[in-house]
Image 1: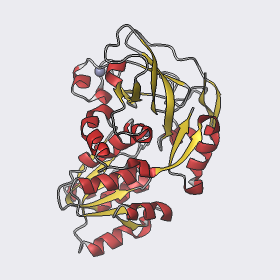
Image 2: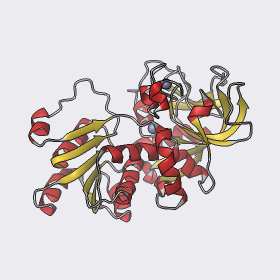
Image 3: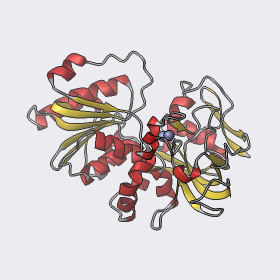
Length: 345
Ligand SMILES: [Zn+2]
Ligand SMILES: [Zn+2]
C-alpha cells in the first residue's frame, strides 16, 4: 500500500508503506478515506520527532471504512464507517476503563505514526489495535471532515479548555491560533467565556479568530493590551496551544492572580525554565498533557451535530494523499493560507 513516510528532516514522501498487520485478534484494518496533518506532525517533519528512526508511516488523524476485523472484535463489522481515536489504549486496565487511555497501565498510552512501533494513518490502510475501544462509528449528522477533526484536534482543544477552569463570564486568552487554537476560541465561548483574546504572530490567523468573536492580538502587544483592557486584572483562564517556550512564558504572564494556565502545545524540552516565583506569588494553577480522545466524544459529538461547534471552518485545503509532501511543505511554511490540511487517499 501507499502512505506518507518520514525519511529525514523536511522529507516526508509518498511511497510504499508496510502492509497493515493485525496486532492480535482485537485489531481491525480500516481503509482510510480521509486523514489530517496535525501541528504535532510538524515536529516530525522538522526533524525533531519522537523517534530516531526513519522509514515509518506518519499521521494519527484518520477516518475510513472497516475492511477486516479480528475474531475478538465485537462492536464493529466490515463496511462500518468509523473514526479512529488518535490516542490508543489497551481498553481493559483501570486507567483505560476510566477513559484515561494516556495513562494505560499495560503498554502506556500510544499514538499512531510517532515511530515504527505503531504505523501512522496517512496511508491507504490503518491497523487499529483494540478496535472495540479505539473506534467509533461516524455518527449521523457528522461529516467526514468533522469526523477527522474529532479524532484528535477538537478533543485536544476541549481537553485544554477543561483544564483551564473556564466559567460563565470568564476572560480567556488563547495563545496560538492554529486549528486547535481556533477550536479553543470557539469552545471557550460555548463554555461561557465573556471575552476571548486570541494571540498569534500571524495576522491571517488573528483575523480568523476575530471572525469567531475573539479580540486578536499580536504576541508582542498581548500583555500590555490585556493589562490595559482588564485594568490590570488579566485573564481568568489561558489556553496555550503552541508549545514553544516563549508562548508558555507569555501564557503564564497573561493569567490573573489565582488564574489557570492550561498548556496543550507540544513542548519537547527537558530543561524548560518554569518561573516558579511568578506562579507561586500569583497562586497559579498550571495544567498540561495530552488528551484521551474518546472520553470527550459524548460531549463533542452532540455539539457538532447541533452546529454549536464548527471545527471544519479551520480546514484550508483538501489534497490527494499522493501530494502529501507538498501539503507538509505548505503547512510548515503557512503558505497559501494553509491551516488544517485534509488528505484523501
Ligand atoms: Zn495531533
Ligand atoms: Zn490500558
